[in-house]
Length: 492
Image (cartoon, rainbow, N blue to C red; front, side, top):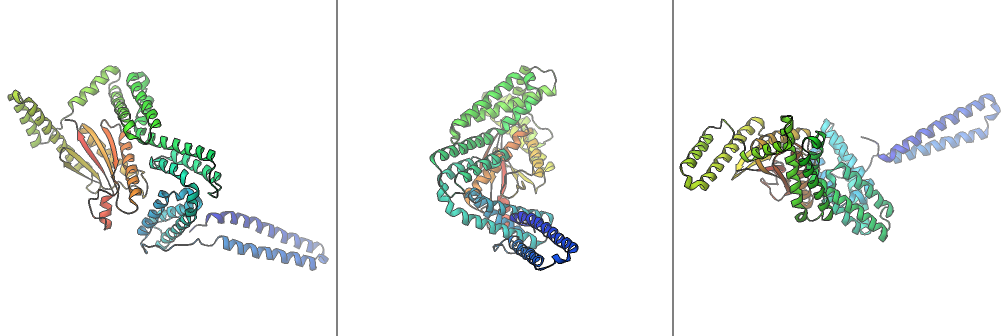
């Protein structure tokens, strides 16, 4: 159990006062020793006053440092359920922008919730976890009560802030810090929402939130490409593959500008973003060829990349399916009149060979508890069963990064054309919050795949709670529904 934040200042003040009290007593006794006549009514009154002040100080200290209010937990005495309950309350508060409307109370609640999570992780006593969770819930309740009457004052500017949040501000620490600065300005200009904004202040804050929204969309859509370009520059791409680097950089800047003009219209910026991802991927591939064979000219490296993409790589040691492929090749040679049909058969057999090899590799490399791999029509599905995002966040844990890296290795061997990252949640919490969270998590996985220098195109989509595969009525079902699926399409 820790002291409430206001208590820290009180404690330091108490220390200073106690020092003064001790010093005064020593001084009085010193005078008494020098002059016994001083020990009279006046010194008696002085001592009485000092003692009275000390009593008042102790009473004030006790009142200021009393244990904060605890709310009733609906989840009972189960620590995990208590933390889940309060986390949902916190997420709802975020969704309703209570974090800006009642920042002090919200921050206190978030701090106690973090303590409860840390206690659970360390195996602390159940009572400590439940106490911190109950205090956190009380602070969130207080925050909502304080925020409700303030909403009317800030309603219009909160619309601009919500657009920035919806664009994905919380997925990047730099953007989070920028929003915190703007929020501080908002609280200052409204004097903690006690007065409405002037037209000039409203316009200025609206512009700041719009700039933040643009940056969030740019980060969401292009962070992977930016990272690839910066990595290539660090590896001396300016000298080794200047034309490919220049093309990727121009595509990136073009996409940045188009997003800035229409951040809320994906139909306008989508092609430019896709072009950027394509050219950044080509840059990565070309640099890999050049690094693998030093001295390779850029134009030759580009041709090698194109040939590899066109030919693909057939897996070996896949038994019966490989025999089917050879049979299809023989049929193709014997019946030239049916060339198109045979090409389709060859492509199908080739795809099946690669799918089977990928599933065999997955069986060796992945635990069934971590991921499930299966074929769905002409696509291969990797179901990440234990991505283990921290509650309410889209931060990929280190263990899960290793899992994604293994899956990326398997997908690369497939000569994949496209991977669609699908984010899913359970039905706990509001559908809007779940939709947003699933999109943020799908984006995080997609960006991490791109950072691994994927040679395939990557897209992402969040489905929230709308695509359950088990009942949300049980904990096991909800755990199954909280998943990330990678839908892989291969080059024929």
